[in-house]
Image (cartoon, rainbow, N blue to C red; front, side):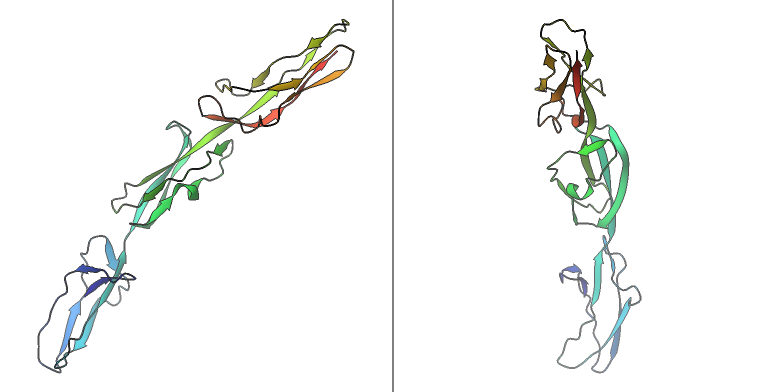
Length: 212
Protein backbone atom coordinates (compact mmCIF):
# COMPACT_ATOMS: atom_id res chain seq x y z
CA UNK A 1 0.00 0.00 0.00
CA UNK A 2 1.00 3.61 -0.61
CA UNK A 3 -0.36 5.81 2.17
CA UNK A 4 -0.04 9.38 3.36
CA UNK A 5 1.57 9.53 6.77
CA UNK A 6 -0.72 10.82 9.48
CA UNK A 7 -3.95 10.47 7.51
CA UNK A 8 -3.76 6.97 6.07
CA UNK A 9 -5.03 8.32 2.77
CA UNK A 10 -4.39 5.96 -0.12
CA UNK A 11 -2.24 7.78 -2.66
CA UNK A 12 -2.05 5.07 -5.30
CA UNK A 13 -3.93 1.79 -5.83
CA UNK A 14 -2.44 -1.07 -3.86
CA UNK A 15 -0.51 -3.74 -5.73
CA UNK A 16 -1.35 -7.41 -5.16
CA UNK A 17 1.24 -10.18 -5.26
CA UNK A 18 0.54 -13.90 -5.43
CA UNK A 19 2.64 -16.86 -4.41
CA UNK A 20 2.89 -19.92 -2.24
CA UNK A 21 2.79 -20.07 1.55
CA UNK A 22 6.20 -19.41 2.97
CA UNK A 23 7.35 -17.51 -0.07
CA UNK A 24 8.93 -14.09 0.48
CA UNK A 25 7.67 -11.34 -1.80
CA UNK A 26 9.36 -7.99 -2.36
CA UNK A 27 7.69 -4.71 -3.30
CA UNK A 28 9.20 -1.38 -4.25
CA UNK A 29 7.95 2.06 -3.30
CA UNK A 30 6.61 4.24 -6.09
CA UNK A 31 8.57 7.37 -6.92
CA UNK A 32 6.04 8.96 -9.26
CA UNK A 33 3.20 9.88 -6.89
CA UNK A 34 2.62 13.54 -7.76
CA UNK A 35 3.14 15.94 -4.88
CA UNK A 36 4.50 13.32 -2.49
CA UNK A 37 7.79 11.77 -1.51
CA UNK A 38 8.71 8.76 0.55
CA UNK A 39 9.04 9.55 4.26
CA UNK A 40 12.12 7.39 4.57
CA UNK A 41 14.00 7.15 1.26
CA UNK A 42 16.24 4.41 2.69
CA UNK A 43 13.20 2.13 2.91
CA UNK A 44 12.27 2.13 -0.75
CA UNK A 45 11.53 -1.58 -0.73
CA UNK A 46 9.86 -4.00 1.61
CA UNK A 47 9.39 -7.73 2.11
CA UNK A 48 6.60 -9.94 3.43
CA UNK A 49 6.29 -13.69 3.92
CA UNK A 50 3.11 -15.23 2.53
CA UNK A 51 1.03 -17.08 5.10
CA UNK A 52 -1.87 -19.34 4.21
CA UNK A 53 -5.20 -17.77 5.16
CA UNK A 54 -3.65 -14.37 5.84
CA UNK A 55 -3.04 -11.24 3.78
CA UNK A 56 0.26 -9.69 4.83
CA UNK A 57 0.84 -6.05 3.88
CA UNK A 58 3.80 -4.03 2.80
CA UNK A 59 3.09 -0.37 3.48
CA UNK A 60 5.03 2.63 2.23
CA UNK A 61 4.39 5.99 3.83
CA UNK A 62 4.61 9.32 2.02
CA UNK A 63 4.42 12.98 2.94
CA UNK A 64 3.63 16.07 0.92
CA UNK A 65 6.31 17.84 -1.06
CA UNK A 66 7.38 21.32 -0.03
CA UNK A 67 6.26 24.16 -2.32
CA UNK A 68 7.39 27.78 -2.49
CA UNK A 69 5.15 30.79 -1.97
CA UNK A 70 5.83 34.52 -2.28
CA UNK A 71 5.22 37.25 0.29
CA UNK A 72 4.96 40.84 -0.96
CA UNK A 73 5.11 44.00 1.13
CA UNK A 74 3.07 46.82 -0.44
CA UNK A 75 2.10 50.39 0.37
CA UNK A 76 -1.56 50.20 1.34
CA UNK A 77 -3.92 50.25 -1.62
CA UNK A 78 -1.10 49.94 -4.15
CA UNK A 79 1.43 47.49 -5.56
CA UNK A 80 4.31 49.79 -4.64
CA UNK A 81 6.85 47.73 -2.72
CA UNK A 82 7.99 48.97 0.68
CA UNK A 83 10.42 46.05 1.07
CA UNK A 84 11.78 43.25 -1.08
CA UNK A 85 9.51 40.28 -1.68
CA UNK A 86 10.40 37.07 0.10
CA UNK A 87 10.15 33.44 -0.87
CA UNK A 88 9.09 30.94 1.77
CA UNK A 89 8.20 27.28 1.63
CA UNK A 90 5.81 24.86 3.29
CA UNK A 91 4.18 21.53 2.45
CA UNK A 92 1.56 22.14 -0.24
CA UNK A 93 -1.93 22.26 1.18
CA UNK A 94 -0.70 24.11 4.28
CA UNK A 95 -2.50 27.25 5.40
CA UNK A 96 -0.36 30.36 5.72
CA UNK A 97 -1.66 33.55 7.32
CA UNK A 98 -0.79 37.12 6.37
CA UNK A 99 -0.60 38.01 10.06
CA UNK A 100 2.50 35.82 10.41
CA UNK A 101 4.43 38.04 7.99
CA UNK A 102 3.52 41.55 9.15
CA UNK A 103 7.17 42.31 9.90
CA UNK A 104 8.49 45.57 11.21
CA UNK A 105 9.73 47.71 8.33
CA UNK A 106 11.58 50.91 9.11
CA UNK A 107 9.44 53.93 8.25
CA UNK A 108 6.22 51.94 7.85
CA UNK A 109 3.40 50.57 9.99
CA UNK A 110 1.57 47.36 9.12
CA UNK A 111 -2.13 47.89 8.45
CA UNK A 112 -3.93 46.20 11.37
CA UNK A 113 -6.44 43.39 10.96
CA UNK A 114 -4.84 41.63 8.00
CA UNK A 115 -6.43 38.20 8.38
CA UNK A 116 -6.05 36.80 4.86
CA UNK A 117 -5.13 33.11 4.72
CA UNK A 118 -3.83 31.32 1.65
CA UNK A 119 -3.41 27.64 0.87
CA UNK A 120 0.03 26.75 -0.46
CA UNK A 121 -0.29 25.38 -3.99
CA UNK A 122 1.94 22.64 -5.31
CA UNK A 123 2.79 24.67 -8.43
CA UNK A 124 4.39 27.48 -6.39
CA UNK A 125 1.88 30.13 -7.51
CA UNK A 126 0.69 31.13 -4.04
CA UNK A 127 1.11 34.82 -3.20
CA UNK A 128 0.45 36.65 0.06
CA UNK A 129 0.31 40.46 0.05
CA UNK A 130 0.96 42.43 3.24
CA UNK A 131 0.00 46.11 3.30
CA UNK A 132 1.64 49.00 5.14
CA UNK A 133 1.08 52.66 5.88
CA UNK A 134 4.01 55.01 5.36
CA UNK A 135 4.84 56.81 8.60
CA UNK A 136 4.70 60.61 8.57
CA UNK A 137 5.39 63.38 11.07
CA UNK A 138 3.15 66.41 11.54
CA UNK A 139 4.71 69.59 12.88
CA UNK A 140 2.60 72.43 14.26
CA UNK A 141 3.64 75.85 13.02
CA UNK A 142 5.59 78.29 15.19
CA UNK A 143 5.31 82.07 14.88
CA UNK A 144 7.11 85.00 16.51
CA UNK A 145 5.35 88.36 16.59
CA UNK A 146 5.71 91.80 18.16
CA UNK A 147 3.55 92.76 21.11
CA UNK A 148 0.49 94.72 19.94
CA UNK A 149 -1.83 94.55 22.92
CA UNK A 150 -4.29 92.58 20.79
CA UNK A 151 -5.05 88.85 20.55
CA UNK A 152 -2.63 87.09 18.23
CA UNK A 153 -2.43 83.47 17.13
CA UNK A 154 -0.56 80.90 15.07
CA UNK A 155 -2.27 78.52 12.63
CA UNK A 156 -1.59 75.39 10.61
CA UNK A 157 0.92 72.57 10.46
CA UNK A 158 3.23 70.87 7.98
CA UNK A 159 3.75 67.25 7.04
CA UNK A 160 7.10 65.78 6.10
CA UNK A 161 5.45 63.99 3.14
CA UNK A 162 3.83 66.52 0.82
CA UNK A 163 1.36 64.06 -0.71
CA UNK A 164 -0.11 63.02 2.65
CA UNK A 165 -3.43 64.73 3.33
CA UNK A 166 -5.39 64.34 6.55
CA UNK A 167 -8.92 65.28 7.50
CA UNK A 168 -9.98 66.37 10.98
CA UNK A 169 -6.58 67.32 12.38
CA UNK A 170 -7.18 69.56 15.41
CA UNK A 171 -4.65 71.92 17.02
CA UNK A 172 -5.11 73.52 20.41
CA UNK A 173 -4.17 76.90 21.91
CA UNK A 174 -1.38 78.84 20.18
CA UNK A 175 -2.92 82.23 20.89
CA UNK A 176 -2.41 85.06 23.36
CA UNK A 177 -2.27 88.79 23.99
CA UNK A 178 0.51 89.37 26.50
CA UNK A 179 4.21 88.85 25.86
CA UNK A 180 5.24 85.24 26.33
CA UNK A 181 5.22 81.75 24.82
CA UNK A 182 1.93 80.05 23.97
CA UNK A 183 2.16 76.30 23.15
CA UNK A 184 0.41 75.16 19.97
CA UNK A 185 -0.32 71.45 20.27
CA UNK A 186 -2.05 68.63 18.45
CA UNK A 187 -5.19 67.23 20.01
CA UNK A 188 -5.06 63.80 21.62
CA UNK A 189 -5.58 61.07 19.04
CA UNK A 190 -3.72 62.78 16.21
CA UNK A 191 -1.01 60.12 16.26
CA UNK A 192 -2.47 57.10 14.49
CA UNK A 193 -4.66 59.08 12.10
CA UNK A 194 -4.71 57.70 8.55
CA UNK A 195 -4.55 59.91 5.47
CA UNK A 196 -7.56 60.41 3.23
CA UNK A 197 -6.05 58.13 0.56
CA UNK A 198 -5.26 55.39 3.09
CA UNK A 199 -1.51 55.37 2.36
CA UNK A 200 -0.07 57.29 5.31
CA UNK A 201 -0.31 57.24 9.08
CA UNK A 202 0.69 59.88 11.63
CA UNK A 203 3.52 58.25 13.55
CA UNK A 204 4.86 61.37 15.28
CA UNK A 205 3.83 64.95 16.05
CA UNK A 206 5.89 68.01 16.95
CA UNK A 207 4.28 70.85 18.84
CA UNK A 208 4.70 74.48 17.84
CA UNK A 209 4.17 77.75 19.68
CA UNK A 210 3.35 81.41 19.44
CA UNK A 211 6.02 83.77 20.76
CA UNK A 212 5.04 87.36 21.51
